[in-house]
Amino acid sequence: MNPIIAANWKMNMNINEGLSLVNNILDSSPSKKSQVIFFPPFITLNAISDRLKNTRYEVGVQNIHHEQSGAFTGEISAQMIKSLDVQYAIIGHSERRQFFHETDYQINKKIHNALSANLFPILCIGETLEERESGETSKVLKKQLSSALKDVDSDVKGLIVAYEPVWAIGTGITANSNQVNEAHGFINETTSQLLENPVPILYGGSANADNAAELFQIKNVDGFLIGGASLKSESFCQIIKNIT
Ligand code: PEP
Image (tube, rainbow, N blue to C red; front, side, top):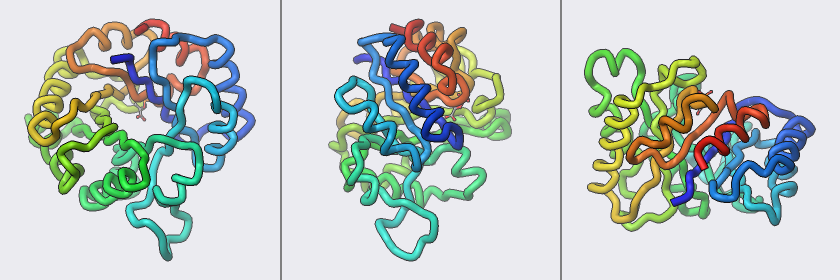
C-alpha cells in the first residue's frame, strides 16, 4: 500500500496562501508513490480542489456537522460537501473533542453521515497524557473506536484511522517507536475484530521530516496526519521524500 499523507491545515491559510502552498508542492513533485490529501479550511476548499483537479492529489474537509441539515448556524454537513470535489473528512480530531466538546455520540453520527455522503472518514483517536500515565491508553482507544464505529457496516470500505496521542499534537513531542508500535498494533487488532476490510492507520502528533522515516518503519504505520509541518512546502515535501 502506498503511504497516505494527510495535511491538516487547521485554521491557517487564506485562499492565496493555500494556492501558493499547493503550487509549490506541485512544482517540487515530491513523490509519485504516496497518496497525499489536503485538508484546507472550508472557505478555500473550492479553490484548492479546482487547482488539484487532474493531479494525483486529493482534498478533504477538517470537520462536518453531525446532522444532515437544519437550524445549526455556521455549520456545514457532509451532504453539503458532497457537491464539491472532495473525498475525505477528518472526524473526531482531538481539538474538536477538546475545544468544541464533541462527544462519542456526535462522532458516531458524523461517521455515518460521511459514509452516506461518500466521504471517506479519517477517524482520529488518541489518549491524553493523564490517561497514558494512568495506564488507560488501550481502554481509551478501544472505547473511542467502538463508539465511533457503532452500527457501521462491517464491510465498510475507505475508512482510515489516525492515532493521535493528544499530548503529541502541536507540542513538538512525538510518541516514541515503542508507544507507536503498541498503539498501532492495538488499533489494528481492534479494527480487525470489528471490520472485515483492512483499515490503514496513520500516525499524527508532531511528525516531521526528522522523525517520519523512522516512524514509517514501524509495523501498522501506513502514513501520517500532519499539522504544523504541512504548512510549509519544504517541510511537507521533505516528509514525503523521506518515506517514499
Ligand atoms: C494534527 O493536528 O492532526 C497534528 C498531528 O498536528 P501536528 O502535526 O502539528 O502535531
